Image (cartoon, rainbow, N blue to C red; front, side):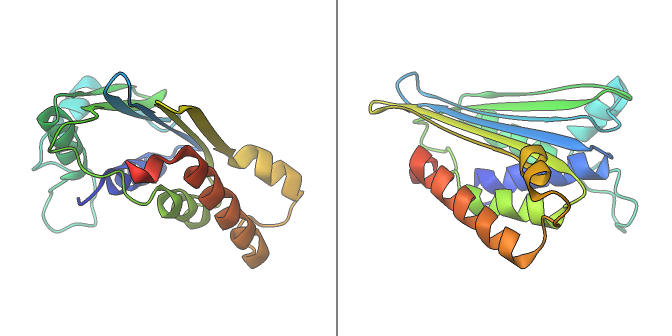
Length: 189
């Protein structure tokens, strides 16, 4: 993975495969405190203790369509967080969903760039119109705090039956997401 947004996209795909109706992604950068945090929470099928342990193993996957059973997404995300002076945790219970958190030391030389959050967010929403997503971005910097929230439940309610994948809606979403992420200045990090 070349950047953190690709890790987030992988975690979103895992949540969707686990049957989540709602996926919440929280991204926080606290520059003065030298912390960068990512939280992915879903209401999918969840995992038992053994499955959580297996998920940390790079040679395990639940993807039956693969010839080789290798799942590198979670182990690589964990490795990248820990290599940057941070930590990685998974909390999950069968039938209750999963919460994954990754914390990075902001100024660590090996911290990956954040990547293209706008494309990651739009790709998740348009690629999985049957799911709901709540994206929350907060950047605290020396110039103050900047927030952006996108909740597809609210957007779908306003659309009143118009598909979220309708071309004009996608264009509108793209503008909202690009402007919101730009205002947080997160992609500059």
